[in-house]
Amino acid sequence: MPRILVIEDEVEIRSIVKHHLVNANYEVVEAEQGEEAIQKINKGDNPLNIDAAICDIRMPKINGMEAISYFQKEYPTLPLIVMTGFPDTQRAVSLLKNGVKDYLVKPVEKDTLLAAVKKAVLERY
Image (cartoon, rainbow, N blue to C red):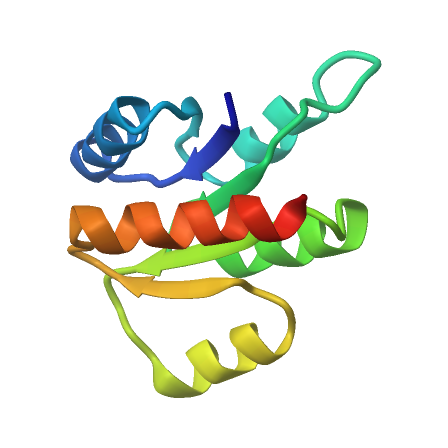
């Protein structure tokens, strides 16, 4: 079962995304912001095996851009999907050119979310 890391500070959105993913047979690891996501993936001696990560941009402490940069440096094979409520065409183009697999704008339709995750997981393997 593929494991997806969902990094989102809004509880309701994180809950909806988790619900859709669990119903589509994904295991979900939740993080409220970038710092927590980094702690979870690095916990213990072995890094947590994650098949893809969905990351919000605007979050407290370590924001999405910082978290994405960290994951790209430390886990270059981890597929990353950005999910934001503040679309920015320049940022989207830049992120996609730099390896982010998809750029989703909230509220994300269930089918769009699942298609992006499926594509990211398949590209990993």
